[in-house]
Length: 93
Length: 430
View 1: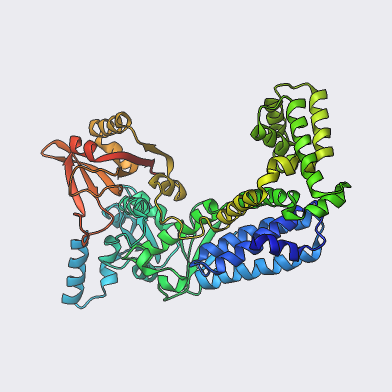
View 2: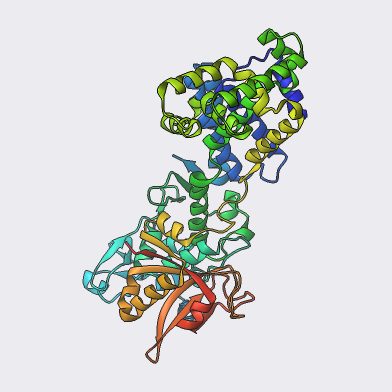
């Protein structure tokens, strides 16, 4: 029941309609939390997955007009690109 | 080939010469190139080239002679063997392609030397590329040396570039993960996560008990009104209508029509309005199952966990198809034959016209129960038809290399091959 409690704390004034962006952010945060505990936290596959999730969420943030959030996520996307390049020699087009 | 390279090393020592000059010769006239062996890499007009046809045809490569020798040093260039990773299909395919002059060109064309001496590897039409700094080895890219092919750095880079590209294209599909989690969150949200009091307030219902009773009542009404046979069917209809924006509109419409058994626009309009009006109560009864809500939530949370964890591990190391590798490196019309008739027909075609073999790259796969002790089960091999005293035989090469528990090369009759192998992967050489 941890997640339910967590959700209640995070969203005390929760409305019935979850936006797609909120949902995707929840997915992203859960992914980060879980992957940090796994053996793959520094694997290139982790960063490629994070990259794919970020691209998708940024697109949703843009659609929902969430500029500040989109900017913050774009900064993280650039960090992930940098990590992939420096740590694994990978460039994604 | 390995013996030839050993001879090169001996000659270099004996005559006090640079082995690289013996391995990659320099030619000064086009006429002299006519005598160069197919697939041989050489220098002409200060450029590294590869001989690609029996006349004077050659192609220029994007790396220097020095870099080529660093990436594919003598002996190691022909002694690449699979590491502790389940990528036999990949290593067998790389070895097969490298053994063919045009295949070798296709692989070497993926390599570009940059002005700072670093090497970039990019597969044809790929969305990713990898770069390794000058003088560094594969571990500098975070690659576990145990899990990659042992031998030439060039082969390791090609293997890694393929795995990265495959992960980018076929790894966990972000939109699918988000889509599923969105649906799950929607369920969780609408089933109130235990906040029954909030839902009561929102809907103007006095007590939780009354809310649950109302949900059940609406649920039964929904099923009977639209002639829905059971809760699963009702849930499906609810999901297609309530989450219509997540799917292709044509697919949503088709599913609604299928479930309702009518395409009458008035009925469809009415059911959509009914769902919109009673959405929360319908979710309560069909997606939360009211009475066993805790159990249902647990199930949803488990689903959410599965989507977060899955696939984030070494990709390309858990099996695959050589035909995908051939595709990725720009070979044409790749095919997988996995029935005896197709395999047998293809082999017959090669036996009738042995020159055809030069037009294909081929690997073969075993099933879980190989008959011959010399053949590994559930494994991929390079494949070649040879003729011994005019008798057609199959020679297979194990990507595990020479030091493994099974022989590296096995020659067998066609019948023996058919008993041990159940798949052929082929592609046309471009």
